[in-house]
Image: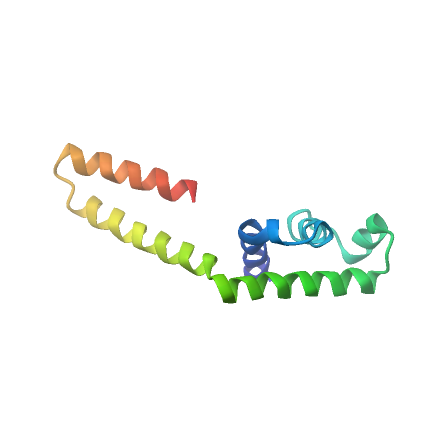
Length: 112
């Protein structure tokens, strides 16, 4: 469940601006604020089933965007490559330049 939650949050971060306001809001409430379907239904003044349907449609929309655009996959690939470069530089670090490069790469990784 945690893995799914992290995936949905990451997809929402990447593609959230492509969602409707209601889709983005229901995903944020459910996955980021951990509200139950009943709590969301009360906030939106709709049925619990309608919230469930909206959540599923929103998740499906995000997954469709990822299948077509692949931004999350590319992000993960770049992150992995940067981790490998950092590991290599740390293992062969005998110059100040390498130290600065590692620091710059680590800063970049943390900002992702």
